[in-house]
Length: 130
Image (cartoon, rainbow, N blue to C red; front, side, top):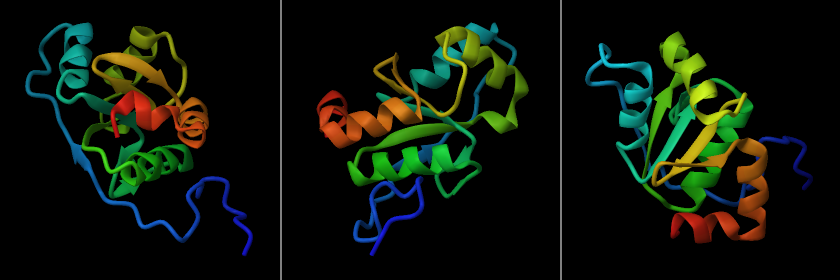
């Protein structure tokens, strides 16, 4: 059976475990960089994405969720579509223009393409301690 869906990198034989917790901001009156740092600091593994783990709003976010769940790690997510300030601010904060963006212990790991490549090579599991 061929896998024609470019976003279904795991294939239908893998049933991922859901490890995501969607988070919202506690204090939206802080400086934008402080708000972003607080979100990233809410979990060792943090994902800025479109939508949430239960309902990703783009294929790249869905792919990243599937990868993280397949690694059976716990992580927090933030829906960038819910806050345009955060959506634009994170691009400047990370100097990375696209979403999703995965962070580990406060450091940017990368976007969907890098995450997918790292997953296939086994590097992502090592980096995330999975």
